[in-house]
Length: 175
Image 1 (cartoon, one colour):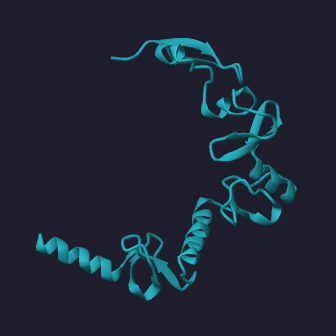
Image 2: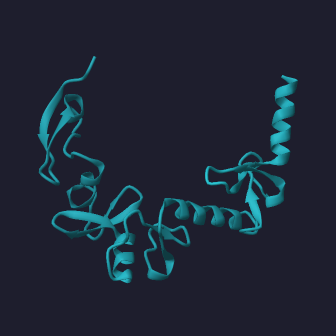
């Protein structure tokens, strides 16, 4: 059984959308999306950059907003970011958008790689020499991991160390 919906106009962007009648009765249903819900139209907004979700947003004209970290990186680069590029915060603080704290990553895979290196470093491991076992949650030398062949023929370590793989196999045999 579907809940009744009512046509509404978003107070932020003016777009028509449908909201559930029960949400309107609760005082919700004023915005068409989460991105429209933040910023100056929010009841908690006190001025300055609008914070929606995890990052602060800034207006870039025409009613559009972009993450402040993206705007800072774009300004430093002097041109729009390449398609698929992501901005990484070196110290992990999403509110610190200083130039020296931002790295422009060519894609999501490189961005995840930087987080993986930072995680190994934070756990006392040595990036490029140690891996991180997701089962026992410890950094270990790369030689302590099995590898698998990727579709392009490269060898990549799996995320569980040999000791944990063998322990899991023994546990399954015993069950």
